Amino acid sequence: MNKVRISRCINRLGGGDDELYCSRVYRLSKIDPYGWVETRWVLDFTFYLMRGHKNHVKAAYLWEQRQKRKGRR
Image (cartoon, rainbow, N blue to C red; front, side, top):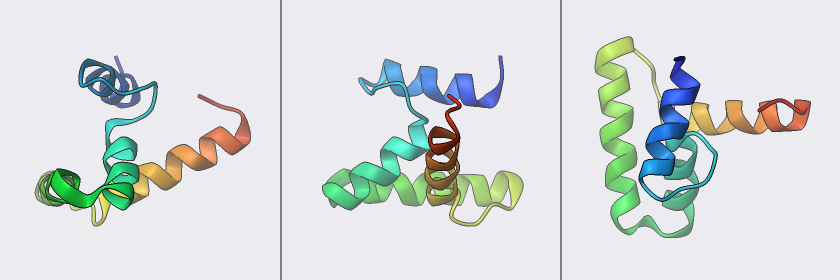
């Protein structure tokens, strides 16, 4: 199972649609910041510590949007 499938599975378990969990967190932190901004900070900090990624949540959202424009899932 690859990272994209795992992220989408986590998102569906949390009540979301078929999108990356980080994309959902980014989108919802822009709409309704209460609770989601903290989740975004935690994810960004975790991915920074684990892999050195800066702004992982936003990058995941932008990557998924590019994939949708290309017609990929």
